[in-house]
Image 1 (cartoon, helix red, strand yellow):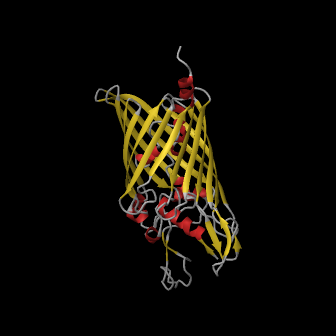
Image 2 (cartoon, one colour):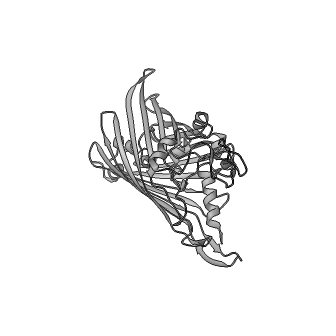
Image 3 (cartoon, rainbow, N blue to C red):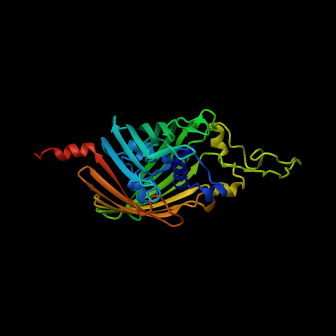
Length: 400
């Protein structure tokens, strides 16, 4: 049976997590549901996909839920939309809805929904006869709790349900497919401190987020389960107030997937160190470690399982650099850069964008400029909207 869904899924993996034919040959880490790694908001998207240590906003759910504990508002809602893989398939898109509500001065509840539509797909048999039309889709629903633990530090936990329906129950190679599901959790922390730098007010931010720590996912009863994109993100930011109207922020994130690196296997006909001749492909590991392990083992193993040793482990880190300028807390200009090693996906791109804020309403734009390959967001303008509910209520009241 011919299945365009599989092709779309492979393209999604190619551009979302840096794996593809070129990257697979060079040992890129692969996971299912790569849409979980996509920056949902235009503020972070304009700064090279950074966000774990930037100032709290309504989109903190994706980057670092613990930041919500230090957010200024009592409640807020954010909405964003991005066309995806538009250069290849015109009807793929990702939508994101998020919000938070403050319980008291120290505690905040938050939640989000991300939905990815993979467009219209026609399923045909081996003779090309149309059997059904289907719209593959994926989604994740999150709920989080954040709390201030000390004067300068907050912590947060998030729980996530993930759903991925790529084939609509169709038969592939004689077997019925099924939607993939998974449950996952995030553990995060955020530290902020006000200080002085060059006789100017300076705001330091440090953050971490261990995200998508959860069960594997399978699309059929007999298929081997695959890892979801368990991830570790570390970052720092610094904001300096140049004067009462102008301020600048510089920030950096370091990212690592907590998923086993594919090992190198002996080829058929090769002789092992023990003198045995390999008769079956992928039957014995030549370098690296067995990737078919339990979740806790996979997390710890991901730091030392690369076939080429520690040098390859360092190449699995991705780096995001961002800068943000605000004038009078009403107008922002942003720029950033994202870097991934050539043998791990080779994603390299510059980003830019702007933001406008007025009476509790904020709109952000971002634009991506790829350096090494045709990124699915190349020459695409993304936008995000956010609303501070308490500010909107205040703005609607008549002045006394």
